[in-house]
Length: 504
Picture 1 (tube, rainbow, N blue to C red):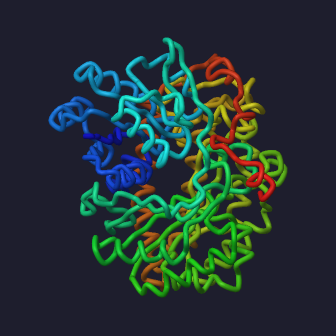
Picture 2 (cartoon, one colour; picture 1 turned 60 degrees about the vertical axis):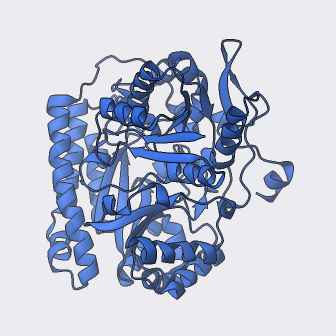
């Protein structure tokens, strides 16, 4: 069967500003098993070139597929664009079957089918095996009712089958790297790059996380097989930079140590970045030298907040003391720390922002990134915030870089100015500038300078967007009225057996 996979363009600042882009791992992961099943699969990456929707439609028509698969890693903020594209595709090719997948349609499957009649089937949860079964059924003109993990219209009404079983062995499915031209993708200063995923899921219970329940349980690939794939990407495709997509790759110290040693054994010169928890970094103080030797140059530490009570409320499970120690340990081992500070968990005041600034000075991270909490309906945080007012009604702006919930104490412009000022004061302090331009480690200096260049452009662009482009409402609806009832009781997207639940 002829299949076209589409990655629609994404308008978020994080996607557009660096002028560097990484390939869509989720779509490549779906494409690999389909290629192995003998299908003719093509990928149109509208994000890497920021293609106009009409151009994507033109390219699809030239490929004449029988099935179109659409998804995006920025699922919520990319959804409005995906809906427009799907409508255009169906208008030009009414005979084609359109399948929509990702985190957002997994949980909002009913609304997607009701509001977007052009969507034929939705894949819910991880899609490698589900999509493979779905394509086989479509090819054989079989009924879809027996396929777990999908949603479609039955008798004209949205209908969902039972959740798909969780994939037990992630090595059973390969990523379709041949679907892309690796020369088109770069990151971290022009290095040829890809996104990879060693593990899926996270055992922690952070109330705001929109990914934890999607993967349902933490699982990992075989360390030696994964490291061998890294080596092949370097030797066969010239990949020199890898960004880990894992929610929490260091969940098991033993498994993580085995992976580090396997990567070191491959003996390939790579730059790698990932997101880690501060408590895991502190736990691994005795093996941090392996982190650096394996090629890890920077970690995003999901610090989220500097207030201990807020961290406890959102069930982060971390501590401010641990955050400080993690930054210190990374610096001792020549690894950069990028720390996130998230605004909007509470109705903050200017005093709260001042306290955060003082705490960040004590942390002394190499780099910071400020984000706005973005409530997802399937998370416990949504239930906690369901009565708060929504001030950003454009769902394309729900990308963690725009304030979407009202702060009862401060108007949006005050919050915006305070956060932009905090970024400058942290990144432009003398100590930070010395590290950026005079760091004794050449590798660290290059990473700092790259982030400084990107940061300046993003900072200025965010100001321009706030003043001239983005629009906020003064008296918006409540979060529950905007999105609907909480879905946190259905947070786990995949079917878990009793044995798996007991083992967890």
